[in-house]
Amino acid sequence: MSRIKLLPDSVANQIAAGEVVNRPASVVKELMENAVDAGSSEITVHFRDGGRELIQIKDDGCGMTPQDARMAFERHATSKISSVDDIYTLMTFGFRGEALASIAAVSNLEMHTRDGEAELGTRLEINGGGFAGQNAVAAPRGTQIWVRNLFYNVPARKKFLDKATTESTHIVSEFQRVALAHPEVGFRLWRDDAPVYDLPAGSLHQRVVGIAGKGAKLLEVGVDTSLVRVSGFTGRPQAARQRCREQFLFVNGRFFKSPYFHKAVLQAYEKLIPATVQPPYFLYLEIDPEQIDVNVHPQKTEVKFTNGGAVWQIINAAVRETLAKSGAVPMMDFDGEERLEIPVLGSVGGGVGDYPTLREPAQVRDRGYNPFVEYDHPVGPLDHHPSRYDFVDRRPDDEASEFEYIVSGGDDGQRRFEELSAPKVFSGAVNIGEGYAAAIYGGVFVAVDLRRAREAVLFDRLRTIVGSGHSATQKLLFPERMALSVDDAGLLRDNAGEFAALGFDIRQAGDHAVEIHGSPADMPAEALDEVVYGMLDELRDGVFAGVTARRERLAAVMARSGAGTSAAAARLSEAAIGELLGALAATANPSFTPQGKPVMAEITTEEIRNKLK
Ligand code: ADP
Ligand code: MG
Image (cartoon, rainbow, N blue to C red; front, side):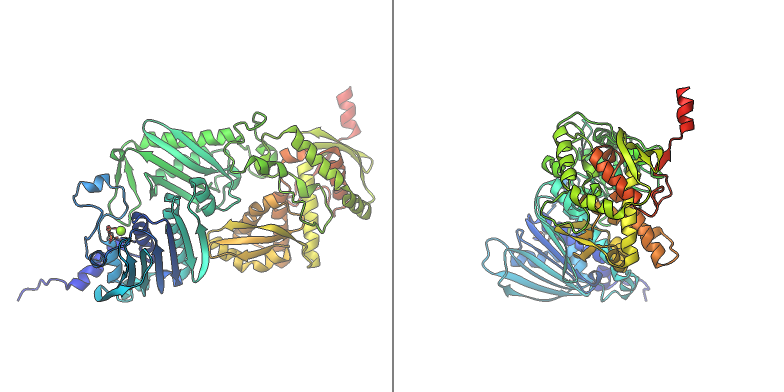
């Protein structure tokens, strides 16, 4: 008797299915790409329990006739190619006609679909690859698919699925990739019945901001060469973070991974950011399809480039050029000398420095000050420092309005000054430029680093809050939405108490995003997302000797971001400087920042004598 047997069809199908769908995220990817291929304008994805219990997708695309609906589940059934040659010129994504058959082989699948002409739609049910029924139903135009109990009949595969949070992370990544490749299509993502993303159809810029978050510090990239066109967005140096996940490369509309081109981007940031952090980027290459070799394996995201070296150079140059235009200059050390972040000033009025930022010029002018918000704390210069976005191309009238405001807000500041005046006071403060002031402090001539002064004042206020247990929260008129990695969202959830204790009102907005509804009273609104990211980094990496120590560390991080840049401090009016120094004198430690950097330096009479000899 022969020892070789043919595998039963059902087993063969399950094995083949593993090639196409090896985890819930690949089901999501295949179904989303089918929906895009069907010409949909709105696609909604919902999943439960990391995709194991349910993956549901609804589109408003072309739909299928009853015959096609049935055919679609046959292996190698596709409407997208008819000859092998087509593979090489293919514009659609799925092209092996295997996805639906594979998914149906390892789940309980139900589909409702109706094509434009038909009055009634078709309902179809398949369990573990076995056809379980088809009938007519009322259905909207388009297709809706429910995939339940994925891998229920493949215990080996099911066992190797990671915990639900990991699978969710993968699903969200696949969702982001497809959404970023198709800004012209509206996408929604729900997880466990809660919204994660709602991305209306729009421009690429809107889509990238939808994924990266409103506060994303991004610059536009655009370079056209005869070999390749590179466009998209890349992060400002300040947006770089440890474990940055928002790094996307697309070629001809298709997501791909390339450690090689990743280096091309990173290298452009050399000397701008420390080696421990990475910038977000969203880069789109357009290239003659003859120049690339797309691996047809559905799980693979590699693409081979015939002229990879040249493309590397062009990507690198494109990112470099964008960074140069933005005024980013190399930092010389990374231990927090903000002085070195001072950008080259662009030309006045809508110069190049302005162009790549995502902010509209109108917003640049009001720099986060909201006249409708009632500040329930002393109004001081800290509340109104310009954000990091707008330190280039400032116009004289901006300057004037800022000063005006600070002066008019001076009542409260004056009261605070009187209340808190310590025996040692500053007098005769003058702005001597480049972020320094000269003043007399307790009878001694001192030079003050204004940015560090802000940091020390802010830290002192925050520390008082931590110590008293009474956080002063200022409600934001417009909640700030922040996209987070699933990890960061978890970290934030775990430390919700810390954030609340420091005056944040942060609410979950789906799995992948939060909304900031309120912030510590002294934090400038424009710095909020940076502050939160900084706090998350600190919580992730820090080791603390107790709750108070941890909160003090967080307060220090907040103070650092909230204090803004030296360039911003350099523009303080004399009145604002007077007020700032008044507050500084009242702090517990006016001489040092929480990082231990000196805030001021005494200029001794001996030094003066030496100079004047
Ligand atoms: P492929 O995408 O490689 O053609 P699939 O198994 O993913 O293979 O899909 C098989 C066929 O089913 C597709 O070619 C298409 O004609 C049809 N189809 C799948 N999903 C949809 C959808 N959401 N709307 C309309 N038609 C679809
Ligand atoms: Mg497909």
